[in-house]
Image: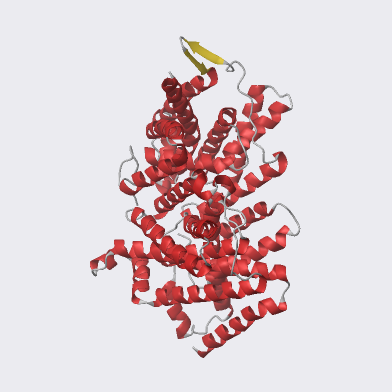
Length: 286
Length: 325
């Protein structure tokens, strides 16, 4: 029975990773903006919601403000900073690392270094009992949310006019501009969507694993792993990879505790070295 | 050429005067600048000269540090034994990283090196019997290792020796192949060079001297922890190189000196040094893509517009890297 619990735990953790990775696969995989501050926006959303909720704000309102606040912060960063170095990977890396340091340090200054947990969504607390299996309701719902979000974002990109514009803006900026697509606006909105998704993951991820000012980078790394292993810009790939990483992480921790991070990252490095385009990715790497 | 000899002589006099002229805290800071400067210079073999943006060099720095920590506390090895072993282990780790990076470029290379460095971090974090886990190895005895000014002079000697070796390496035929690979891989392999071997060699040399810097750092601090393996160290050395100027041999060293000096100065005023560091990163990305040296050079050229650049300087430009692309 404990195996089933571990499997569900792994899947729930993988679902959380997918929530983070879905935002990253949009900004990094699709827009090709290397955003190493993604984990910082995850923290920003989580801490904002936690702060409001502890002051007595209604849970769903606190969550909405956390998500929207981080999305707005992301859009400001995109417009004021990242916009100036579009297409230059190395400066993007340095800039977003700097942004991550600033956000992490400011969170440390305001909330201290001890881990915090935003509350579990009301109605999702407590366990589900299915026969002999007892499992937290919240974690089961998380799995459902991840699959639903994967379908929603894929459909948004594939079937809606906005999705078509996004794909056009990414594939050929100049041609998209020529036919009247407002590329800078699209990029701004897509970046906001990406950071908003990161913040949403932060609110719920915090309720799952707790948050601390330096946990943003760990989350970012796992999300990067998911995005790349799944194939850049591929939402279904990200879902598969996220669930796989969640399971590897859970069982790795249980079976080989002394080698926890080593096995995961060494395996990822090996996958990348042999198949740089990712598991489900297509085409050659530049 | 005589100008260069004069400059080296002047620098040597200044560096040797540090322990005489400054207080003990400043000497400590100067030792740290030397060590991080060596790290940045070694890093640039892969980054500036090799055109390979690594974000995993903390691994080599930390491997050097843990070599000292483990060897000294367990077997009481003396410094003349730990330093060469750190160098060799750094070279081996560098070669392994290089092998992983054979087929990837750009962002992918960056992410592979990051993943590999996290794997090393994971080892140090979870193999607690050997490494002390999260606590690291505190209170490493420094028998036979001088302190204060003596350590500064030792660090100066090691750094000068290593930087001179790196300079000679990069000017050697083998070192020049790294430059050639950066400029045009296809032409290098068409002329018969083994590009794979060159990559592995660049990583091995860079890893070896990065590990020496990490070992020196542990002798300076008297302890080692997983902090020396964290991604922040990898990011910092990347910023050293870009900020100082990855196009020039001494650019990264200058970057290390600027950031470390700034850190000491700022932290006397505020605890929020990390925020300031983040702002330095952001400003570097926005305004200093070719580094302080690159900036000052182009400024100088603008001032002297019309005058032909001296031939010697033109030759230096052959070690250009497109750090901004």
